[in-house]
Image (cartoon, rainbow, N blue to C red; front, side, top):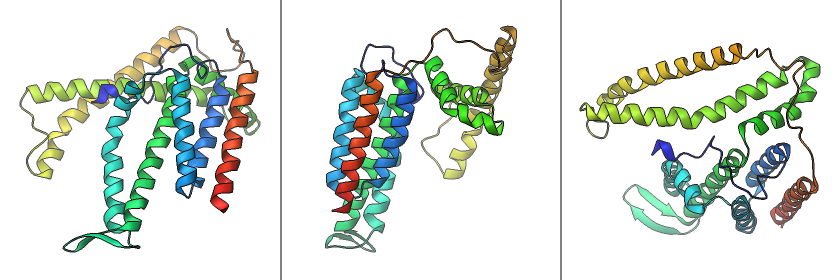
Length: 266
């Protein structure tokens, strides 16, 4: 299951989204995440979901690959849906189960929040799926350049974010290997009291943290061996170039925002 997580992975295919400037994709992702929270009715949400599906089609990434990567968050989505389903009151009563009852507003609110969560994860995943680690670092550094006036190390900060994102799939795969090794030795994490299950996680967490520290040390030694001294005085092999695609993409996001705000005011 862990190996199917798509957050932090990069899929090198030829597509419209892959050719966009990384700054455009980062700005657009923030705008879209803001818009999904501004969406307050089903007309706006359907429009946003349609726009997100259109972006997935433009990425040329197989839809099944995206679906398989989103499966791990379905547990959180299902929990959120059930929480709103039974806790939100209002409207007609659809079902009564003793002390619990399902109201019309609870169903619609739970579905709305579930779609919102899936949309956020899908949009943010598209950024890493269509942007190489080097481009992502350069884009973040360029966007954070104004913060250098307050002595914020933009290059180092962007590098840390990029490394953290790229190490997510690695750590999840490592966790899956350790979990399978522990299960082969007779560790049962699927049955028994909750206290026993929590205790059984200790043999999983300890080697995982040790592996994380080892990888961090190896990465630091590799950077030091290559003479890494920070962002001062560094040159770039490929300069970021803003094109007409980036302008059209941001204008499309702005137009979507205007329509969603208009639908919100109706």
